[in-house]
Image 1 (cartoon, rainbow, N blue to C red):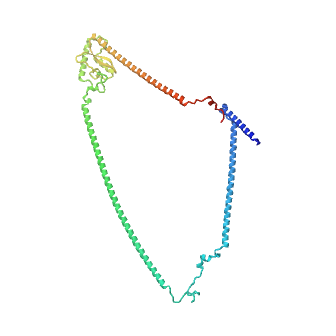
Image 2: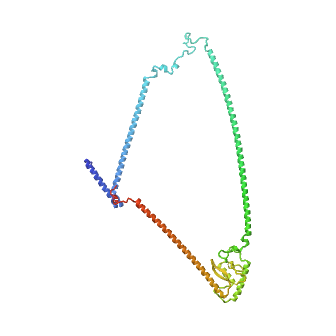
Image 3: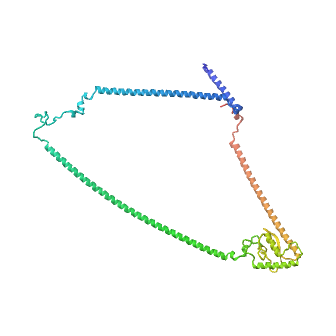
Amino acid sequence: MHKVDLPPGCKEAATIEARREREKQRQTRIFNARHRTMGVDVEALKSQVEERKLREETEKRRDEAFDAERVLCDQVAQMLELEERQRVRCLHQALQESWERDQPPHARREWDLNNPEGLRLDQPARVSDADPRCGPASLQRFAGEDLMLPTRRQLQQQQQRHSLEKQRAERQQALATSKYTDTLEDKKRVELDLRAQHLALLEEECHRAKDLATANYNQAQAAEVAERRRLAHQQEQDDNQAEIHNHLTGQLLTENPAVAESPLGPHRVLTDRWKGMSPQQVEAVWKAQEQQRQENQVSKGREGKGRILPAGRQVAQASRESGEASSVGGPTQQGVEGSPKWGQQVLWRLSPGDSGTVLSPVPLLAPQRLQEAEQQRETEWEAQRQLAARAAMALAEEQQLGRLQLRKDLDAYNQQLAQEQRAHQQYLQKEVYTNAPSAQYHLQFNTSSR
């Protein structure tokens, strides 16, 4: 596009119009649900990709130009720095050469005073005894003179005295050092001996305390073990005595028949505790069987409502039905628990019980009274059935009352929940959602693409 010089107003109007046009195109793309959900603007994406690539390429070129310029600036700075160092070096070298050429040390006024080799290069007043300069007028040497002899002897004596004093001082210092060293060694040895003695005493006390503690611990352990053994022996003796007493007074050896009594009824026994019938019971059974045999011979051929069996067959059948073994010589304890008195005529009858069929003795009645006994038995059965029905009705009524109470509790809980829900809804409507949105609130959406 070519740049066109437009007035400021026209430029602003064109910018605003272009912005509006772009906004309309953007709204068309955004508010078009089909285009927004099912496809994308490929051309716009391509243009965005090209713009991004162009922008990245421009930035890359700009960075490369900046890098090249920075490298060039660094090289120029290095060259300038090198030139400056060379200029300074040349200046220093020229100054040094000027000093060496124009201002040498020997050309200076104070050279005589500052000459380090002045004394060494100067000729002494007397070189030797044959020095031609030392004539009579030079007053450097006289025949037979030794003017420095007293001074030389005094110096030699002082030197010897100083040497002797130095040797004596060194010897005294060595003796004092040796004595001091011996004293320190003696003190150190005494200190070490005292420390060793103290450590030995401490070690001995420690061993003594350790031995005493070990002895006390061993004594305590021995006492504890002895006490434990004594208690164990005492417990064993008590257990043995209790076991002997239990065996002597228990029901196992004494064969107490009361332990075999069943809680289900007086005519039943516990088979795991029953020791068998007593001789009196066996004798009573035999006598009852003999009487029944004689009575059966008299009443043979006559049947009643009850089913009369011989004593032996009755006992055998009851034993087979109840599943319990019978003793040799008589029926089991179930049939003897309610044994009749001596001399009374009995009838062994099969009757239902709480846990199965039970063999129970019934006194042998006359034929005219058998019907009354049967009626009485039916009456008892009817009473049992009524009691069972009453118990069932009571249980059903109790269950019904329980269901009603549960229903009442559930209704009360539901009412409480309903009240809480209504209170929560009222709180939301009156306290939380007080500012209900209007139609104008919903119309402000989807009016712009931004």
